[in-house]
Length: 252
Image (cartoon, rainbow, N blue to C red; front, side):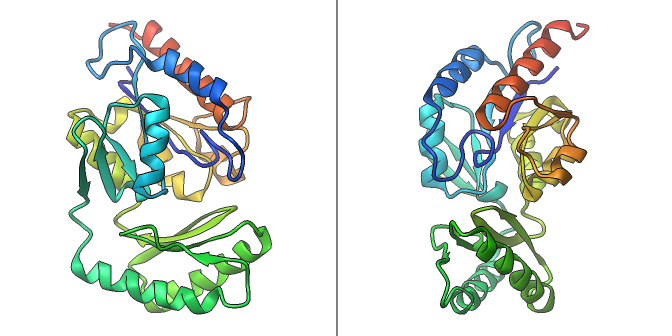
């Protein structure tokens, strides 16, 4: 059975610079409102988030969806408990890692000079840039990857059409899901995950059921167990419905 469905946000529940599809949010809340982690037959899975976004944005999305389970932010380096308001950082994020993040941020300040990009200062465990110009993001990905490989090889680069994120190689979404599974007393095999970009690949490969929305990158679509017919939040709805059906028909 799938006991916990975990969704990325950008490219899955939302599109950059586009209003939320509140009707899809309403339908999703209806689908997972009775979700359970107990593995009871014929019940939908519980629902939560794993996003590269910072805590404030992730918490707003969680509130809009009525999420009460712990969720992951900053690509799994942070965990937040909506009911108690407790925030935790992954044990792998050390003082040395924090110093490296600051060094990378300083380098990125120079990279964005003369562009429309901006350094993302809203995160604690990651360095990155954000912007709406796709070609500038692509050039930033290439330059940042070269810098990280040469100066901070313990870090990795993830990207979306609007962002470049640099994180510890031991603090990606795959490690985040393993941490969340341990916290919630389940296995990653009892999780489903939906993601759309390269930062989601590790998580897609370790869960029991993996999905890509129709708008996922070619690499993600190839790695996912199922590619939904719909894109973005329509794809998330489709994937959740598939997991509910799987739970109904699983032998017990």
